[in-house]
Image (cartoon, rainbow, N blue to C red; front, top):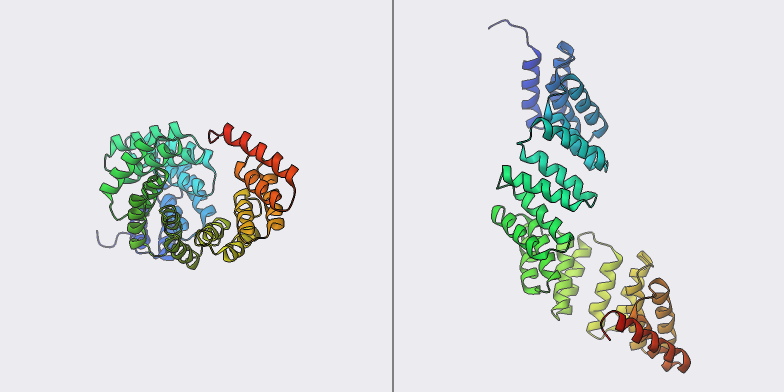
Length: 350
């Protein structure tokens, strides 16, 4: 009716339009106006919480979701929204409690079950998470993220065949999603199906050319295929996209060693150690390349560190045995060979 004063419903509806348009200040202003008219109007608190969340003010978002819940304890979506923020902040138990409250109020919402599954998987509760993702799919069989996370959960518990089935379904539903392709590529790499892995990494990189992890893992797959030059190209690309990890330098060093360039390999291993000196495998690789370069004394030093960090690393004892023999330490070499034989046999490689 012409001349009617705006109500809390009017301001909240207008605020939602502003929120969808990304006009956060205008949206918050409208929600404030709604609450000035009715300070127990739960939707205004909820939508203002969304505006604060979209603006990065997570504490205010949680406060408003809580106010919405107090105003209307039977309103499920603020529980869900508060759970999303709490999970983002790492408060997984609190997030699970919020998702559970939302599910109790609205059990047929696939997203609520899915979100609780994500929080549970963050805590390593795989069986509970799988049940949640399955519930989500029963409600919405085309929930691609639920299929994807079922793949993650099954891969993490060692059931790779089932994981592949769920990854395949997720990709059928959203074939251009780079994270799905990346995850399936990792699974194929686990299975040593490097051609299939590289094809998935290629697809992920085609969508996101700066996908550093996909570039890096494609490099690993290429090296495992016997293509160290292709591997180095991918490692370089991953670094240009911001990756600067010890494992990147380590694997780039291994690729150089594969090509017989042990001096460059040593430089890469030293860069890896500068970033993380606790990786026994890096010290093992460093020892191997130092010995390949003829510096057996330095090789022994590197193998010593590898053994110190991982006393069960059989190859470190084998490498040190050969290095000790070269520097005239026959007794030490014999002891190391004996330990290598014991460890290799225990690992089923003897």
